[in-house]
Amino acid sequence: MSAVLEVEGLVKHFPIAGQRAVVQAVNGVGFSVARGETLALVGESGSGKTTVGRCVLGLIPRTQGAVRFHGAMIDKRHNIRSRDLRGKLQLVFQEPAESLDPRMRIGETIGEPLRQLDMAQVDRVKRVREVARRVGLSEASLEQFPAELSAGQQQRVGIARAIVTSPELIVLDEPTSALDPTARAEIIDLLIRLQKELDTAYLFISHDLSTVRYVSHRVAVMYLGMIVEQGSAAEIFSHPRHPYSIGLLSSVLLPNPKLKREVRVDLKGEIPSPIDLPNGCYLAGRCPFVDEQCRAAMPPADQVGDGHFVHCYHHRKALSGQVALDYFDDFQAKAEQVLGAGRR
Image (cartoon, rainbow, N blue to C red):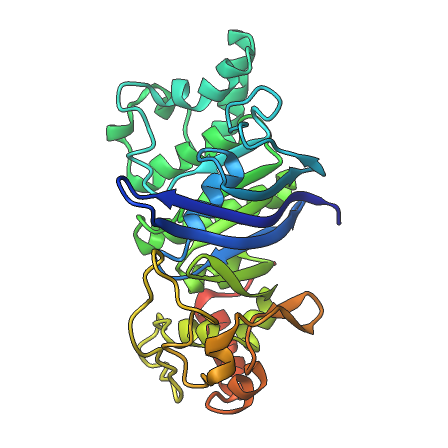
């Protein structure tokens, strides 16, 4: 599959007022997303995943690196509102209520991107009604204001606004984190169905690994501004290689309290400051496998499978030492059982 989006060597540093130091939010991130594919960026808060999404869309300028859309370089000065990209790249926000203008009716909100594309009003009205039906909104709701809708309905409005221009890439920034479990499941199912119908590429940003396992084709694990492991969702969830990936999976709470874990991997210590990053591997101060090599130099990318890359000198030790493979296989089976059948 040809890539819709390609990111190479992406760097984003934020200057600190009155100081020479900078916040090193993103350091050399690279990935691609194909048409009809979901790539999930996962990691703890502060890992840089939201910053990556905003750099991709041009909502904030990148410090270094290349972002290509269908092979064409996106200039650093371009943003989501630039004329040549208008409508092709869209964003769904984390907080649906905060992303909607409380003074605008729902129909106006959904149709606003079409107005920016200079579409005639009669055509906008027709398209808005069509998209509203597609995301499960009633025609009556188009005359309502955001405060009159539930959080789940508000997120449907956000999704409708994103797909109304038939985009080729949608960045979804924690799109279900503000929803209750029922609304979350409904929105996940809606996103999966829409992707199948529209063949849209998704960049799915989340810390919710249960949701990521359900919706993603590939996963990129971020820690302190860099991708430490990247591969298919099946590989990352059943055979994680990086100690940080293993630690993240070990910390996932199972929905069913009767499902018990036999293995748990805890990452010790504190997360280093992005203002003063350590030499070598950023995880060295928290990793049980650390040695002098880890502290001396950042591990290069090592290919451990088809499309599966990991930045770790000791990924074989991490895989076969403290963590049992059958545990992760068992966890995957249990997660599928809890989430239910029907995943792609």
